[in-house]
Every structure is written in C-alpha cells, then in structure tokens.
Image (cartoon, rainbow, N blue to C red; front, side, top):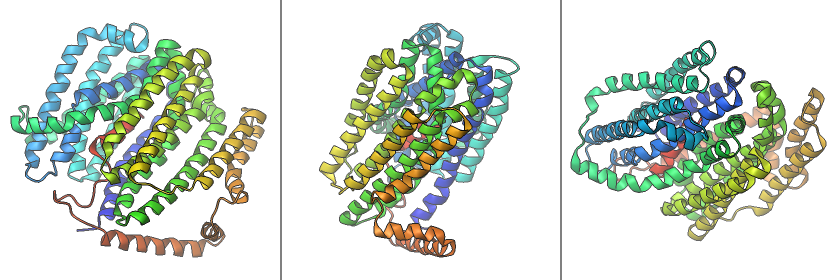
Length: 527
C-alpha cells in the first residue's frame, strides 16, 4: 500500500482541481452574465443559490457525515451504509420539495424582500437535485475514484455552461435562467449517476442502521449549518435591508475574492495530514507555529493584492453597473482569509479530539454577523456587510485560539505576525488614501505597493537567517531546484515511516471531523 500522504496528494488533487476549475470558470463567465443580468437579477439568483445550500444541510439530516463515518466503521456493512443513506436522502429531499412548493411565494418574500414564486419554485426543486448530487459524488470519494469524480464534475460544468448561457442570453430569462441552467443540468447528472449506481441504491432503509446513522449524523448538523450560515446570511440581510441590486454587488465582490478560496482549498488538502503525521507534541507545536506564520503571510499578500487592485478587476470582469462592488472586495477578501485561518485552528483543535468547541465559536460569530449587519447596513451599505464579515470571523478566530491554547498550547510567533499585519495594513492604507482607483498609471503604483510587501518585511527583520538563505537561492535556480527535490524526498520518507492503519481499516488519521469535511464541500457549491 502506498503512503497515506502520497495517496492523499493524488486523490485529493483531483477533488481540489475540480473545485478550482469550477470557481475559475464561474469568474470567467462574469463578463457575460453581468451584461445580460441586472444587479438585482444577479443578487436574487445568488441569494437563492445560497439558501438552497443552507436548507440542503438541514434536509440532509447529517446523513453525508454519517456515511463518511459508518462506511469505514468496523462491524458495519459498507453496502448497507450506501443504500440506506440514499434512501434517507431520497425521501428527505422529495418530501421537502412537496412540503415547501406550496409556500414558494412567502419563501421568496422572506429571502428576497419581494414576491417571486417562480424563482422560489426552481430553487425548491433544486433542493432535491443538490442533496442527491452531493451524496452521489460522495460515493466516488468513498471508493477513492478520483478520476471518475473529476470527470463527472467537469462534465457537469461543461454541460451547465452552454445551457445557462442560452437561458440567460438569447432567452433572456434572467435569474431564473441561472437557476434553471444549474439545477436542470444537475438533474440530468443526478439521474445518470442514479442509473450508474442503481445496484448499490435502495429506496427503503435498514431501520437499525438508520437509527445508528441518525444518532451520529443529526448532532453534526448544527455545526455545519452555523459554519455555512456565517458566510451567507449577510446576503439575505442585504437583500431585505438594501435591496436585491446591492445583494448582487456584494455577490460579485465575493466572486472576486475567489483567489483566496483557491489557495485555501489547496492548503486544506495539504495541512491536515501533515499536522497529524507529527507524533511528538513539542515538535507539532513548533511546526504549527511556523505554518500559521507563513500562512498568514501568504494570505496577507493575496488580500493586499485583491484589496488594492479591486477596481480594475471589477471593471475587467463585470459590467459598469457592478462597479461599486469594488468597494467591498477588500473586506470580503480579508474575511475569507480569516475563515482560512479558522480552518487552520480547527485542525489544531482536531488534534485534541475536542471538536465540540467548534460549535460555540461559530455560533458566536453567526450572532455577531447578524447583529453587526443589522447595525451597519443602514449606515455603510454593503461595506458594512464586509466589515461585519471581518469582525465576526475575527471573533471566531479569537475564540478558537483561546480554546486551542487551553487544550494544546502553541508558541505562535507574535512579533512576526504583528510585522506582517502592520505592514499589510500600512500598504493598503497608503493605496486607499493616496492612490486613485482608476487609470493605468495608478494601477502600476498600486501593484508596486503590493510588490513592496516582501521588501518591507525584509527591512523590518521579519525573515529568519535560514529564510533569508532560502530567499538568496531564488537567484540560483539550479541550486534551489536541488534543495526542493531533496526536501521532497525527506518528506516522502517521513510520510511512509509515519503511516498507520486505524482499527476501522482506514489508512492514517482523519484530517478533519466529518461535519467540517462536508462543510468544505459546501464551500465548493458556492462558486
């Protein structure tokens, strides 16, 4: 059997690649969509997309999380786990659609602030599609059929794009076209996957197994829902408080921050197995400290780029009616970076096995986000939503830090972190205050400010002596390549030595709790 890290890298890369490509395609299509959709249309579609994901978390009843656990659990029959899971989700999704469909009008008024029952009906039908789609793709993950997962995911994207373009552009269906394109093609994929897996599925669950899975899965639902709600509730509040057009601008800003999401997905793939492969606690503490320092540094660089270059990015990728979205790209990017830091701390918490502390942290963040949005939206518009996002995620990070330090103290490099944050804040402030946000000449100036961050860190003594030696290697590519290859071989050997099999037969230790792993998949659904 190959080493756990190597297997994770090969299979995980396919899952991450599918996510990254779909996010990039979503951004690439913005110039087209924003010229045929008004900000209000785009806002309505994004609110509905987000609401569907949130409600699907509820109607899934924690079954996907239970599937991930029970499929590998000793004493359970994997085939029965798969068939029972499908039966639960099939009936939960179908019953939810039947129950909710008569209330399409009130639901649209609740979410959008205006009546649009047709759009709500499409979204309600999408609940069934989305719920089964995630389950059926999870089967590929369980079987570790990364190539099949990638193929199906990309096929879905490639089918959805032309169908949606036809619905939005020639047929001029607006927000309804976006939802129909996504869920209509999604239904075709779901039906195809059901036929493909027909011998593994059932419409009647095994009652004893059902009870055991529900006992595990249902308690995971609040944690997953609170995590997701923290990142989407603001769009509903914007729609209700400021209108759908402002919600559309805010959604565009979220799309523009996808650079953070791409980096985070790669990091989420690499860090958990590395974090849990270190057996010695003292060594792990030092490693986690160094990882946090450099993770914050990279995130700071990306946030400064997105913040300062936002006006040009928005003008390039969106119609002129969406230009005001640039005002909130920076805060939204900072919020995404804080979410990424929260995920790092969650991995540290996972080492202790006390992941129950995650729920109170996210609940506090969610309550703060709602309260701050209600306070700041009337005062600052969508910029207030961006500020609320940053503050709420900051609260979550602070609470997670306090919890993890009590359970597994890590000596973080506070002076280095302070240098990074202060330097980044200073450069962003200089760009925002003194450099206009239009014109090619001023774009160059802002790019120079972004590029200045490493030099400012060098001047302030951020880099250690060893790190400076590595920086010097950038001027000697041949020697740098040799060093990287040497480090890769050392890491591969260390991974093989640390490989282990747990009692369930699952190689190695899990990187994240099932609820958090599934929440990461929900993150992919937002693009």
